[in-house]
Image (cartoon, rainbow, N blue to C red; front, side, top):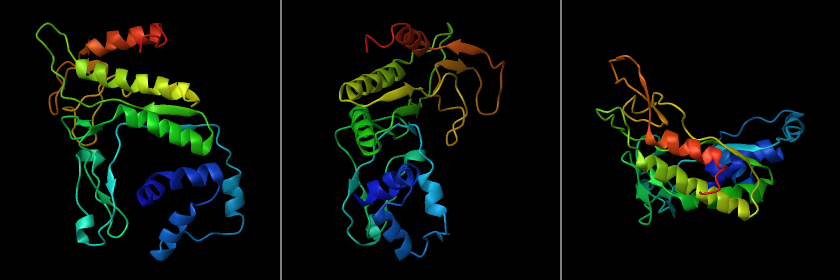
Amino acid sequence: HNWEVLRCWNFVDVCAFGKYHPLAWSYLKDRNIAPEIQDGDFETLKGANPDFIAMNYYSTATIAASKGDASDVAARAGDQQIMLGEQGVYRPSENPYVEKTQYGWVVDPVGFRYTLRKVYERYQLPILITENGIGANDTLEPDGCIHDQYRIDFIQKHLHQMRLAITDGVKMLGYCPWAAIDVVSTHQGYKKRYGFIYVDRDEFNLKELKRYKKDSFYWYKQVIEENGKNI
């Protein structure tokens, strides 16, 4: 609950409800990092009235109870998905029931459905997924093909869970996969790829920057044409 409030709910609470979560506010005050509230600030926040929730989803985090000592701070997972923990608040843990990508990111499609349900239950606003995808070291074959079945599997499973969430009553505004074309990863450069379209270059050699459609491109094109009816 500590982690969920401090790392998740409080950010959206301020925008959607116009106030800080009480636990988060106590946390900020206890550490002397609470913002100074001026007259009219909360009135301004309450006037935001967002129309929808936009969020990225890649993986879940597993949290354990704090032991109240320095061992609470310990790294879990890899690059952007590092979990450090905070002494006396929560500690990171491992989920033995999920897979991981080659870069250490947890793959948890069911967690996607669970997250959509919890976000909609709390805020009652339509949800737009602004990013969802898998980073991988794709291989360009001599014939120009890129066989990225792992990307197809990842997105298919997440779309399926999103469809189940819709049957649960969650209102979805849209879904935007990450990404249409390979882009530079902030942590792994061009070695880690997310796109449906392969860009032929490496870290230091731009080559011809030629584009190649991956297997996932043709698969996702069909998903769009069918409006996801076979997901």
